[in-house]
Image 1 (tube, rainbow, N blue to C red):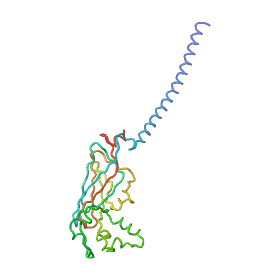
Image 2 (image 1 turned 90 degrees about the vertical axis):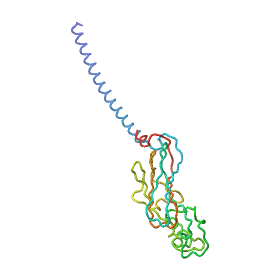
Image 3 (image 1 turned 120 degrees about the vertical axis):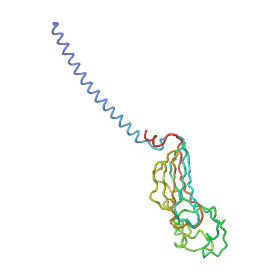
Image 4 (image 1 turned 45 degrees about the vertical axis):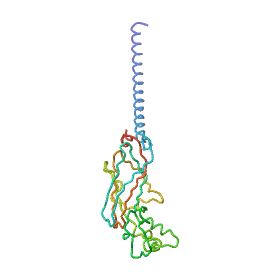
Length: 252
């Protein structure tokens, strides 16, 4: 083979190698793009699947209580708040409202039907629901009883306070997470809506309150408060020990 023929063969072989290299490069580039696409999808789903259960930090049961005092005969809205721990974000799972009786004035307990001896000490310090709804329902469950078991003077001699549904407190609530400007209950929600069946009312979804935020409760009497006492709004849930906000940890 002459030198010229050898050169031409080498040139042909070089062209073939270049063409093969181009094909392989294009194929490798396409595979690399596919791999990058899969990585992006994996990253998307990894971030999307972050939940509260994945947030790092020590978790432990936690209760926060907002106390709102009311005087006898009060009809205007009252509010109070509780500050969440600076080191522990709070996740609320259940809520419940109660009314703590603190009245010592016998006159406030009396009705024209009362003839039996009665001391305010029999009721002071005891807790009622913030609505007559539950006692009304319970009254309907009693065999042979009618709604008047709750809403009349039925059995007044045996218990001069508790049977009277019209003497139960009745409230509506508005719940605000101060600091974030979010409202969990807005406009006002009847207290009966926060009454679970023999247990605190379970929320449909966990409510997150970040570190140093405030839980503020507005209590609106729907009737005049007929006994001095304190509304106790209880938030049940758990705390997560972390200095970083839960929102940032779920997002990042």
